[in-house]
Length: 371
Ligand SMILES: Nc1ncnc2c1ncn2[C@@H]1O[C@H](COP(=O)(O)OP(=O)(O)OP(=O)(O)O)[C@@H](O)[C@H]1O
Ligand SMILES: [Mg+2]
Image (cartoon, rainbow, N blue to C red):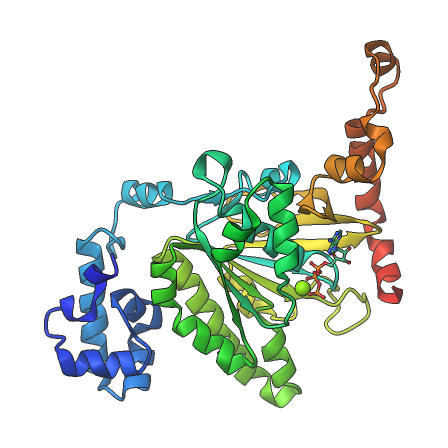
């Protein structure tokens, strides 16, 4: 496939242009689409017209080869392309329900929540689950993990893989980690990701955190629009990559839990509207004591709902499984009679607690600040 997408397979793109492009980090036809004409002109020093022509040719080429949909398409075709969407199981029933089966490819999913809410654990879990065969809810794919906060932990991958009865060494081998040191570096990594994605059959790209470095570097009001512009560029590129390469993209984003800080809405993501408008799915994680609440926010076709999950050795977990691990009591045999007379089985009581935890959630926010 890499061969087919060589830059010189485009009519009129000779060795000189190819070199100019690859010097600027554009290595194949997909990259041309991902970067777009304005950026191609900027990074190669080409005339804007020329860049536009090349990008249009790239688009045409990909349409002809069936890798990209045409500009004007019938809904049936859109529907067909959407049939190619893969889903990655989260390894839990509750989050799979929330995601209507799993985390989708061709889409950017933003996970936002306060510190310790489980964003990184979720990203680790998906990095393992995506490698499962399709029959078991995975995509048999690799992972590109862009780590901006130095929180990627191979040990966690090992224990999550073991909990799911997978070979930890094989799993580690299929995760490509890129540590980003500043926002420009983070952007560069993504710009250069094309060939890595192709060669390793990457089906999941994690950016943890997508916003942190931008926030740290652009402090103060004066630089806000500059920051949003750069972040906008990054997030759009991520979303285009997900669409073009048919992979899932996860961007994490920390939020302040304090109700009185900043703009009034305590659940507002730090990245502000840029991230929100670009991401296809947004999921909000919240701490509630030891449990975690996940809420699907603004999805084009998922109902807005909440579920309760837990964090543990297996990464993100169903509450019942996490409880089974901690209290042996729930595994004790219950006779049929006891079951009938006593409605509080582990599952049922977990459901009751769910309601309670959602009700308690707001007051928990205050607690978590003090933690
Ligand atoms: N091995 C483990 N077993 C059980 N729970 C764990 C384990 N490792 C981490 N956790 C839980 O995960 C929490 C940290 O979650 P995580 O690092 O995903 O948060 P985060 O949302 O990424 O936070 P931040 O915004 O600071 O990056 C810990 O508080 C702990 O409850
Ligand atoms: Mg984290």
